Image (cartoon, rainbow, N blue to C red):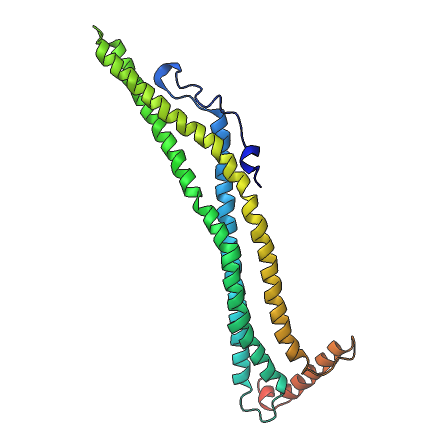
Length: 261
């Protein structure tokens, strides 16, 4: 990890190429263009990943809430049944524990160990975006300074003092542009490579946090399963289907259900 910055060093000897080209136009820098493309790709993918991490947290919360709402509706649906099976109550307790204990714990750890590091990383992207825009403004300033110098050099008779001032403006503009150009070429790769050192620990936390949440949920639902009738084998599903079909057949046999037949 200590070698991250060393491993990303690249030559920047061409950073100022084209600054002194003719025609008063700052020529394109292929090395910067390559790094800007890489940055834009990183920017798009990073924001997509951040959006998905938020979406996953929301999905887990929605699932726990939906389970609790289903349990509540089930309890209401059967509230006047005199000999209600005890596993219904056990399920309501399990759903409540998942919604009010397991999910909030997941939410806190997931937000701190997964979402926040990614959000912090993405928070630096606008800084680079502003620097790229500043480079563009500095390039425009340099072009303006060169055009002003060209006008002074084209005047007849020439004004040596005015030409000297214009040349000084060009030098200042060149230095500012060159400094920003070199900095971006050197630091965009560092930003890109550093993403690994953000995602590695966050992904580890992501897996462990999921495992803990689903383990807690499984423990709660396991208590419900212990109250269900024992299963005897692969014929259980067929037996359940037969029981449901038998009940549906009795309902169909009611006189009201045959009025519109």
